[in-house]
Image (cartoon, rainbow, N blue to C red):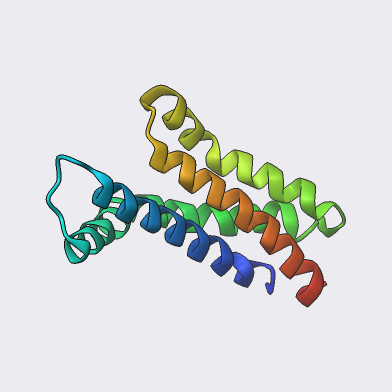
Length: 127
């Protein structure tokens, strides 16, 4: 059960990465006249509001895959974390390739990095 509680690392990392990318891309858009407050507010609406279904499914998939892959097979933790990343990320990899949306690529990178950080946290604190 303690392994499931480490999912906060993924949630925080993906949220922070996508939010920071959204703020920076909003401020750097030449066609936009947004100030910093508008950029932050628009990014919050994008990440939380528009991504509400994503966050719901992301959390459910993390918990289910942790219960199926990681909890029973702790010996191959890094392999299972990478497989978990591939399973959850596959629709977003498709989105990056087909639609050329960089925000998906940022989310994928943040999720991969947080999976590696999560491995270290699991090995150090829980096992």
